[in-house]
Every structure is written in structure tokens, then in C-alpha cells.
Length: 612
Ligand SMILES: [Zn+2]
Image 1 (cartoon, rainbow, N blue to C red):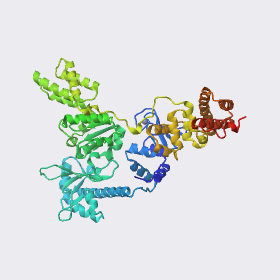
Image 2: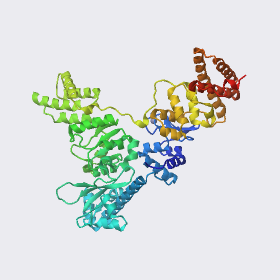
Image 3: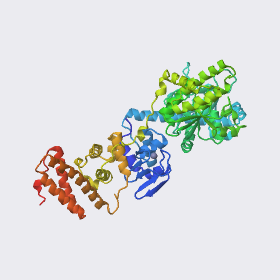
Image 4: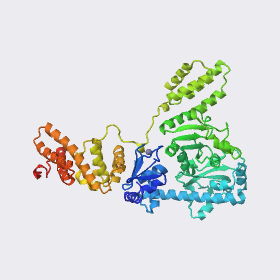
């Protein structure tokens, strides 16, 4: 289900991978390849390589690989369809979808995005100029946010009427269904449309792609009850996979390798205004797995800018699980105890920016706080503090880290017997929670090739040419030329595919990784020596496999080995004289023998065809 294959192919062909990658990576031309520092891992010397003719990239450092579509997927964190749509828009290609429902679903979502965007514009205008927006404006000013801030974050005011927004949007040709599906209005008992948000300060929320999805809305009345109300779950608003501010922060998060996570909309605003543009916030929910699916490819380094201790031990253990599962590291911003960034703005602007420079590892933050608040005057009180510290330390998955903190706790609590504390930690771990055993999961997109056995140089040379210049070598090379099962698999995949892209789409991960690497490795394909080099590659590979065939025929006392030996001797002679035009037909005959040795069928133009 999705975009028609034919259209995906058109988009891929219409996209210049070098030009696309240049938006993210500085590239230098090396021979016919382009290379630069890899956007997918940190490195000092360039191992990211592009073969422009094939539209393929490969990183020799982290094995990231693929084509224009996978490149844009990874750097811009899009799904497949999103990536193709993005490239299609660049290339001016109108996409067709193979499933009418799917296409309808996309259109429906687009309509809801438009409805929310129209509501954002309406609320924003009302905040800036509406007579009834005064209370909201005064509130913002009291928090140190001026008109520029309101414009930067597109803040708004939802009028305190029954159906002000509903009427406005319906006049703009949005249907009742559009409004209720986007959770902007609902049908009340009188069968009238009624606004969801009334008399509130509106914080618009966009998804990572920058499409408008919903709102966080703060009450302006002094009444009791929750201060914030968020858009309910809709087809475009799923709070567990949204981060407020990610649309603005994405680039900065990647550039800095760090994301700052806070809890409130005004916290994000305060960070951005104080010069910390990599800040985001969860939207009315706690951090969850799905958030890391958004974040893990952006940054490995996560700074929590809220009271990371208040959430307690269970939350801490979840963080360790995430650290392992998503290969991220948590640290805690150095904020004054009990104060949020939004409360520090604007008077303590410097404290806000400095809080993310001075960070503390997550466990240290919690342990220090525990130790600082513990009564250590009596033996009993120290024992209680030690027990709490043991629980805290035991949750950390690393032996080394635990040991560091065991010693830290022992010294703070003036415990002579460190080993005793260590044993206690081990005891808790043995009876501990299953979540501690979470295993590291490798990023499947970067799964490397099998690195065990090196490939035969002549075989891998031949396969590289099959990948890059099938028109020069294709008709001379046969599956039987390859003895290595990994290369055989790759050749067979190519041979049975319509194109390289087709092979990439069909192959298993390991084989595709091999093909994509071969696609960017240096060859003289395209140079004026290409044809001669191709012949040499063919002859060398076939010589090696023919020699193996000859040896096995001799072992089996196969009398036909005489004919193979004659051919092989002739091939070696011509090869030594660099008579490639004579060597290649001999190689072709040997390939026929090789193929027959696998299939059991005599080569049709083999021995009887005569080489005398
Ligand atoms: Zn890399």
C-alpha cells in the first residue's frame, strides 16, 4: 500500500543525490565519486561516499547506505511515503497512490492540518489585535513574553464564545466533520457546533515535519482545576509521539548532538529566547518510547530540564532502559531546585542558558540529592539512607557506573565497609526488575555487512563491475564465476532483478549492504580505460574459478580436464601478453565449462566448438 512503484522510480530518477546530500553535507569530488563527512555518525575524515551515476551512497565508517529516498528519510526523519512526497515536490512530480483508501487517508489528514493551521491564524490574530485578548496579552507580559515572542511562537487567544472559531472556520469552507475530527469544535446536544477551546491562551503545536496538529491551551480564569487543556487524540494529534518545538529545534538538535527536554510550552519558549534552540517539551504527557523513535536519530545526548527526581525510581529505571535500547544518554540540567525555565524567564536569562552547559549525569543527580537530604547523624538514619542509595544505584545497568556511585555513597554516609554496600547492590540486582536486562538493539538501517571472512579479491572485483557497469561485463560473467556464497547470493539477486534499485528493494539486509558498498567503491568505470579494465577484471576472475574447476576435475580423474587445461593455459598466455581481445573469448568458453560443472549440462559451444 502506498505510492505507485512507477512513481517512486520516477522520483528516484529525477533526484540528484549529490545535490540533495549537499544540503546536509559538504561534499568534495574525488575521481568520479563525491565524498564528505558522514551525516549519520561523528567522524573527522570523510567516509561518506556517493556514486552519482547510480544515485547510491555508502558510509565506510558506519555502513549507512541507500539512495536519495533513504537519505532524506534518515536526515529529515520521515517515513517512506513522506520522503517520496518530499522529493516528488522538489522534482515537481505528481504522485499516484496504489490504494484509493490510502490516498483518501492522506488527503483527509491534509485537510485536518489545514483546519488547524486556519485556527492558529485566527487565534493568533485575536491575541494580537482582539479587544477580548487583553487578559491573555497581560498574562504573557507578566511572564516576560512580549509581542515578538507571541509572533515567533504564533501564540493565540481563543475567544470566550460558544462557536466563534467554529463559525469562522465553517465560513472558510471547513465542514463540521473537519472541525470535529481536528478536535477544534464538537457537536453539542442542541446539534450545534461548539468550540473546544474558549477563553484560553493558545500554544499551537506542529509535528516534526512542521504540519499544524493541535494546541496546548492555558486557562486564564482563576478557577481551580487543571491549568492546561490539550487537543484530544485525533488522526493528526498523537500526544505520545509529539514534541512541542521539534519543528523549530530539529536542525539545532542534530547540529549540537543534544536535545533539551522540558515539561511546558513556556519552558521551551524561555529556552529558545535565552539562546538554547534545541529545547522541546512533551505535550501533556510523560516521556514515552515513541518520543525516542522521534529523537534517537537526531541526538544521543538528552538533557532533562525539569525536576528529574520528582518522577521517582520507576521513571529512573525507564530512563536506563531507554539509554540501552536507543543508545542515548540522559543528563540533568542544573536548574535551581524547584524552578522551571519558564519561571526563570526573563530575569534569570543567564541561569537558563547556563543550566544546560553545567549538566549532571542522571544517577549522580538523584544520588547527590538523596545524600544531601539524608540525615547522617545517627547510625539508624545512615542505614536508611544507605538502603535508599542501594536501591537507586542498583537500577543502573553498568557495573563500572554502579561501582563509582557505591564509593561515592559510602564516603558521603561515612560507611567503612564499601564491600558490604556493593554486596547489597548486587543482592538488589539479583532480585531486581526484568527491565534491567534490556539489550542494545542495533539500528537496522546501519546494519553492517558480515565482517568475518574477507572476499576473494578477484571475485569482488568482478562483482563490483557487475554492479557499476553491467553493460561492459554482464554478458561475460555467470553465477558459476563466484565461489563465495555471499557473492553468489548478491550476483543472483542482481541477475534476477530489473535494476539495481529493484535488487536493493528485494534483497536481504546483508546482501543489500554489500551491493550498496560496491556501488560507491572506486573503479575506472566511465574513464577511457574502462573497457580494457573491465576485460582484465573478467579474465582474472574467470581464471581463478577455472583453476578451481580444473583442480576438482583432476581430483575426480575427469578426462575432460585436458580441454579445460588447454583453455586455461591459452587464457593465461594471452593475459600475460595483455591481449584482452583474445583472452575474453577464452574466458567465455571457460565460463561455459564452469556453468556446466554446476548444472551437469555440457557447454554447448564448449570443447567441441574447438579451441585449436
Ligand atoms: Zn557514517
